[in-house]
Length: 375
Image (cartoon, rainbow, N blue to C red; front, top):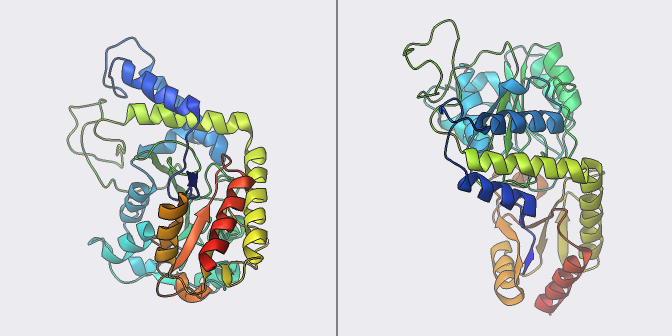
């Protein structure tokens, strides 16, 4: 089986990740701050936070909060800021984990300002500055790397503009964490959402969010924390954000995954995935009847979307998986707005996405399969 759906969930996982998960299941169960056991369970959480901080350029690691993934993290941040949707700017490259909260959360009124992109999925920062000058924008949500075209946004420039106009800068690194350089502090990021099961090489149901010191936001959930159980009413902004029993085994696996990435070296991972992506684009370009989206990008994440004449993307994905054992992804990729701008409105695209576990020989097999399908 050839697996080209890493933008959805990475596969396979490193052996050290699987071992960390199994070891955590074998250990006595205990949650953060909730046990009298003399084990090092609490250190699993702090160790993972510190590793994530090192990987993503976050110094305030105590402000990294674990959740089920970036979807929960984005909902928490968007809801917790206490501002209306018409005071928030987002982009056409955003995932539904941003768009649906902005349009559906009952606490948020109005419609967001949506920034357009070019035919490659790239958003010129000056579009944002033009909106920022109008004075009504209080927050920006930016998708760092498109899960459709792989376009990497200029997060540093967006951060500089946000700082200049006093706008809260929220960065979604779901597709970039673990495979692209992230410098949250340096870029002026105020809040960030990440997921563990994609390029971070962790398990599904892990991830979280970061909110910088001094940025006040209201929790989406309340419950037990294992700290001061006598407190029922929160006053003076003394909120707690990790409530309920945490996924300690999943967090142990995520911590091991981040360590694995750091041991491999981010530069080495990025370089390998860049070569795989370039190799795939060159190979696809040589096949007749294929249109590649985002072909004009100078830099991109490990994602390639395309369509082939005569085939709906869903049909092509079905044939590849059931006749050639090649796993891809078809459709709108939970990112409905971008397709109007890149020319794939309607049925979307067929997407292949890589991890550093993939090989060029697998791309060669896919190309052979596509040529056979095309006849």
